[in-house]
Amino acid sequence: MRKKTVCVVGLGYIGLPTAALLAGKGYQVVGVDLNDRVVETINRGEIHIVEPDLAAYVRSAVTAGKLKAHAKPQEADIYMICVPTPFRAGQGIPQPDIDYVLAATQSIAALVRPGNLVILESTSPVGTTQKVANVLRQAGVDVDAIHVAYCPERVLPGKIMTELVENDRVVGGLTVQGTRAVSAFYRTFVRGEVLETDAATAEMCKLTENSYRDVNIAFANELSLVCARSGIDVWRLIQLANRHPRVNILQPGTGVGGHCIAVDPWFIVASDPENTPLIRTAREVNNRKAAWVIEQIAAAARDVTERTGRRPKVACLGLAFKPDIDDLRESPAVQVASALQKMDFDVLVVEPNIESHGLFALTSLADALQQADVVAILVKHAEFVRSASAGELDAEKVRDFCGVKFDRGSALRKANAS
Ligand SMILES: NC(=O)c1ccc[n+]([C@@H]2O[C@H](COP(=O)([O-])OP(=O)(O)OC[C@H]3O[C@@H](n4cnc5c(N)ncnc54)[C@H](O)[C@@H]3O)[C@@H](O)[C@H]2O)c1
Image 1 (cartoon, protein in one colour):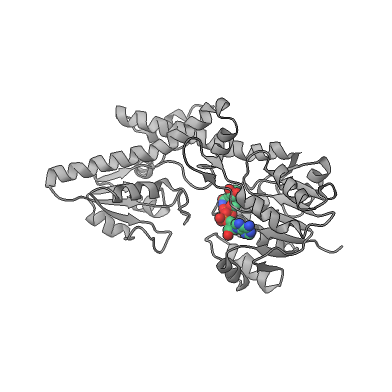
Image 2 (cartoon, rainbow, N blue to C red):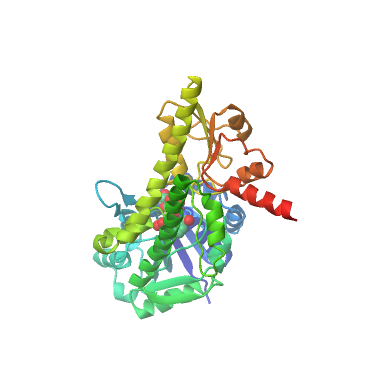
């Protein structure tokens, strides 16, 4: 049987790994991106994002002639939409922006034929899959003769190539036949279970997963503020509380970033503000945590000025939104460093996962530790954990907002006990 052709629209962190994986499974894949640089890079067999193992997948898919990138969609049996779904910030509750999804749908409409699958993978507010079908219908597509479904992506950056295959997937079609047809496609390359539902439930499922994480992180972040005021070590507190057989508190940090957990809960809140006080408050608590971190660092820096009369130097360790990645989107650490730079301080930034940054001059950890009056650990990067283990971050001027120093304390306690 002829292997089907797939057109993946949007070649970012989700679309490119998906396209390369499908090409490796024998599908003939057309990748589409509006960004010419992305298209050229991929057609050279190279990649424009940092993700382990992806480069090898793309190189081999392009060399084998199974993956080719284009600026415009090409005819295929299966269309997958993997474009961004940000929110619009402004007055009041941030609102989902599905314009990229609608534009991507419009761009494939003239190519879609009876029997095709159209799959939305972008994290989307409930009702978006139906809107995709509406756009296609208005463009003249016989929507009853195709299958339109939603299948959210739940991969972890840094492990995308493994999780694309191993994770369980949820598929929700606009019809039962659509759900079955799209699930059958996923079963050709997913080893995890493919779970079938309707489109609205699948859309809500993705938003629920990220809101669950946000609410639980907010709980940890709220505890960290209470503990700071009462002189309790929140890391030790959580370690102890988690010894309860039914308690599993997450770790506090500088806030919550990235374009998923910091964004998707707003899609639920925007759809039903009256019934979502908890989800909304969690978002606010996590945003407030970054503001609190800024206040803490600024207060320590002002103490330096009071004591010495000098303009203080503040070092921020980490910019990424989570450990050991290069992704700075919606990162609370970037927010903290930017706010400090606008104050009367000299700001040094250490971010081992990027080469340069438009706003900040990057420096080495050793220089930051030597020069700064206040050192703030904002992200739990492996390099900082290693330095802490070597006893290099013990100085009182090092303020730890993500538990790096506590881990060293735990390791030392264990070593002393053995
Ligand atoms: N990155 C993740 O870890 C992750 C995890 C789960 C879900 N998601 C969701 O997946 C979706 C995509 O996220 P991402 O991280 O891959 O985004 P991204 O920004 O890395 O990539 C999106 C790409 O789409 C391209 N694009 C935009 N409009 C286009 C159009 N009309 N035609 C062709 N190309 C177009 C952009 O140029 C960009 O290269 C989002 O909804 C996101 O929330 C992302």
